[in-house]
Image (tube, rainbow, N blue to C red; front, side, top):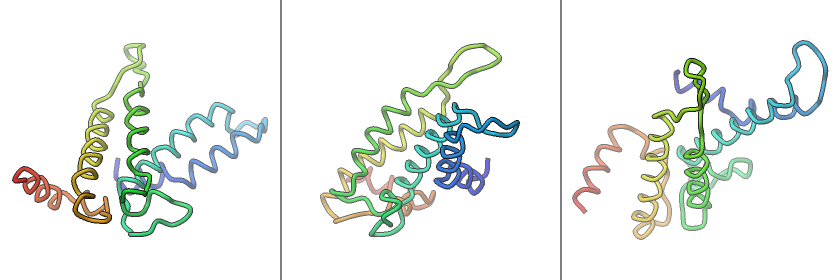
Amino acid sequence: MKVSLMAQVFSFKVGSLMKRISQWGLQYDNSLPAEAVQTADFILFMDMLFDSLNGNAKQAPVSKPFKGGVSTDSGHKKWWEESVKVIKSMRFWNSKKGIYVKVPSTKNLVKTIEGFLYLRTRLLTRVKYFLPRALNQEHRFVILKCYIMLI
């Protein structure tokens, strides 16, 4: 899946609209069932998580508190710790096997978040804030990884 498409699907607009429509209780052929609230909550969770890992401004907009830089009082640490617990508890239905399974992408996402928690601890002793989006560029991450190994 392309990142741009994923960002559109797992967005605040899609999640909030899906949640609102599913709570209307309309009985039409094309209406959303009440269970769609769970899918909407998942979409909103992923949107907040992506925001926290891609913050690109010193100050976050009021409507998107995790879109800003990571600082000691930004709330990122608590959110990431809670997110790790949620992601570790995720299971996905494998229709071929008829069981719930864990998928490698969730394990890798947990590693990414734990990496950001580590970076937060190390970087905030030296700087007031950092922008997570700057660390998500592949070439920059390789440079940073090499630098951290030298420390």
